[in-house]
Image 1 (cartoon, rainbow over the protein chains, first blue to last red):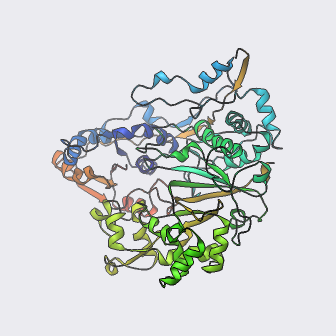
Image 2 (image 1 turned 135 degrees about the vertical axis):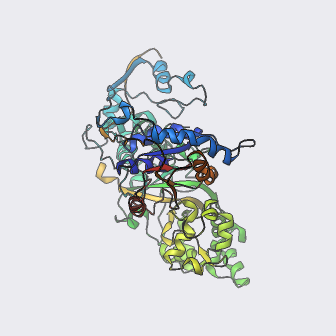
Image 3 (image 1 turned 30 degrees about the vertical axis):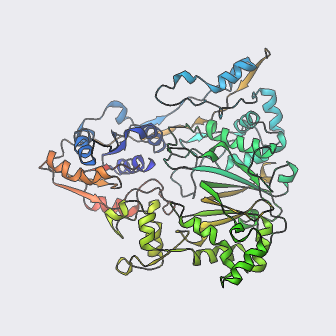
Length: 480
Length: 102
C-alpha cells in the first residue's frame, strides 16, 4: 500500500496533482501512509476487487467518474492546509485502578470492533504485568541511560535498508521500560530491550506475511539464561519468551501496529507473536553475527531479521546422520556440497525466492567445513548461489507476478518482488535480446549476499530455512 | 486483586510535521496529458480505454511502465525513481493517477 500514497505524495511534492486507486479493503492503511508521507489529505479512490460477476473491465469503467472528480473537484480547506501539524502527547499516567481493571484497560474496548475481529489495544492479547511507576523505575536501573533520552527516529524515506518507524513516532527510554515491564522482563534484560528498540521493529504496512525475529549474540545470552540450543525457538525459556514478547509489545504500542490495518496478510504471520533467541556459535569455525557486522566475537549484539515463512530441512533425507549423508553423496558421485540440496529445493519452491536465512547448529557447520570445504560463510553462500539455479522460463512461470508477463521484459522491472530475476540478469549484463526461457537464474535472486546463516540449535542435523533477510545488527553493550 | 495502582502509558507520541498541501486540481481533463503509474492489477489494463471513452478530448494518456517501488533495491523506498520524475517532467504531464498497488 505504501507505493500508492508514496507515489502520489511524490508527485504532489513535485507540483503535479495526483489521485491514487486502492482496493476498498486496503483503505485502512491509506490514512497512516498519507501521514507518513506528510500529505495527510492525499486523495485515493477505493475500488472493489474483481470477483465473479464483476470484471476488471467493469471496475475500470466504474472508477473513471471518481478519478475525474479526484483530479478536478476544488480543494477543501483541509487539503489546502500548509503548516505544522502538532499532534497531542499522551499523559504519562495512563490509568489508575485495581489489578483487574488495569488488565481490562490495556485490552481496551473490544466491543468497538464491528466489521473486523477484535484486537487488544495495548497488549498482545495476553495479561500484562502492570507498568507501575515503581516497576518502571526498577526496570530503568538496568541501564545507565537517562529515562528521558529519546531515540533517533529514522526518516521513512532514508535509505536504511530496512523498514523504519512509521508516522514520525517519538519514544524515549522510559517508554521502552514500560513495555519491558509489561512483557515480564527483568532489569538485567533492559540493555537487550533497548537494543531491540534501537532497531525499530516497526509496523509493516503490507499485505505480505512480514514479521521480525531477533537474535542475541554474545555472553549476555548466557547471563540472562537465554536458549540457543535444541528447541531454542520453542516455548518455555523465560528469557526468550519475555524478550520476544517485548518485541511484540514494542510493535503494538510504540510502533503502533494495528492488526488488520497496518498489516493485511490473509492469514498473518505467527512470528509476529514475538521470536527472540540466542545465537549458539560455540565450536563453529564461522563468524558469528557480531563479527559479521563489525563487532568482536565476544561482544554482545542484537540482530533484527525480517522474515516471511520457515521450513525445516534435513540431511536426514540422506539417512539421518552426517556420515551417512556424506557416504550417500560419495556413493552416487554427488558433490559434498550437495548435502544442502534439500535447502536449495525449498528455496526453489518458496514462492518468492529472493532472500533467505538458514538457521543451522554449530556441529553441522563444523562438519560442513570439514567435509564440504565450507570454511567460511562466504564459501557456503557462494556454493549455494552457484548451484541453486532455475531456468528463466521456470522462474517466470512459478515466481514472477503476472505483470511481468503483461509488461514484458525489460520494461516492467521496477524492483517489484517478482522481478528480482530480471534485475539479476541485468546486473549480470544480460540484455533483453539475449534472454530466453533457458537462461539460468540463480537463487537467492538478489545475489549471494542475500543469504544469511545463523548459528542455532544442537543435535539432529535438521537446519531451518527462512524466507527473510538481515535488517541490522546493533550493540547491546552500549545500552548497559 | 483490589489494590489500586497507577500505570504508565506504553504508547509513543507523534512528532510535529509540516503538512504538504495538495496541488490545485485541473479545470477538466480535456486537452490535458494524464500519466498513469502502476499497472500491476488487472483493472488498470482497461483504464486507458475507459478514460478515453469518458473524456474523448483528453490530449493524451501516458502509461508509465515503471511502477512505484517498495523494493530494497531502491533508496527512494515506496516512492518514485529519479528517472520517472524526470520522465514525467519532460513530458509535461498535467496530472497523475497511481494505479492499484496491492
